[in-house]
Amino acid sequence: MNNVINTAINKITNVNNIYIASHINPDGDNIGSILAMALGLKKINKNVKILKTDEIPSDYMFLPNIDMIKTYDIDEIDTIELLIVLDCGDVDRLGKYKSIVSKSNTVINMDHHISNSRFGDINLIDEKAAATGELVYDILNKMNLEINKDIATCLYTAISTDTGSFLYDSVTARTHEIAISLIKAGIDKSDINIKLYQSRSIERTKLFISSLSTLKTYYDNKIATVKITQEMLKNSNTKMEDTEGIISFIRDIEPVEVACLLKENNKKEIKISLRSKRFVDVSEICSTFNGGGHKRASGCTINENIDDAEKLIVEQIIKMWWFNERGY
Ligand SMILES: [Mn+2]
Image 1 (cartoon, protein in one colour):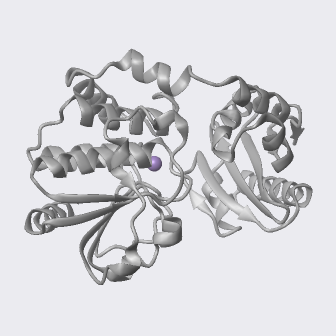
Image 2 (cartoon, rainbow, N blue to C red):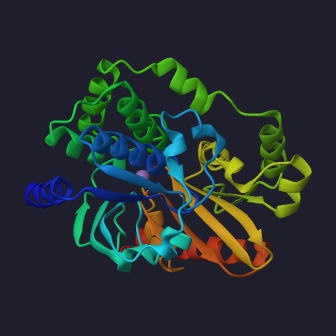
């Protein structure tokens, strides 16, 4: 790992123009990590541009330098010296910017998803990291860049949001060590926490209520599902990115082990998120539908209507659970 970090640092040191890409449906880890990386690189006078692959959820608009994330016309660009991709398991997650990978002389791919396809020239993948924000912290530190308040705010957001506020199994002593140094850098922890977790709008609350009313449980209440349809979004005047937090609410039900959120992107395209509490490896379940992620948090897409998609995913969860319990 150290060798790969040094190779990445050498590359960064020797180029001037760097692009950083966000991914589709960006989350706190993605946005916090890219902003922290960009702010660090600006301090050593690199010319940094951040590609806005998708809309930024309103929760993260408070982050310092969020305006750096912009839309660029990459068709006009022939080659790029260096592209850095953070928290992104595969090239398809770059959406409309995915062609930028082949235009880049070097791609640094930094991530913590087990399922990462290692599409970079330099792949800094550590599935033991609780968030990509931890990896960004490490590389900035190794480059002797001071983690100032703004960078620390972005990294704290990345790590806190990817760990359910430091709650998940993925959190290690290292996660807390990094958090200590981010707090020492002078972040306003209380303000960040209010912005991230205590700022839900009335519209979004109404979406939560209608979504939670679709709750179904299976397998002796150990599997729970909820749905979000386009109609619910319309009725509550919300967007798909406003669904953050619904899945953890149903995972937190006792005795739920696997929580499943089905999001209707359109009638035949259902985006599925799975969370588990103690032992079920949901990345394994999602990989049977060409998705992936982490053991306790993963996603996939099923091209069926929402009720059929629910049936298929629940069947698959039960099937893999049954086989695993019997050691097949
Ligand atoms: Mn992440």
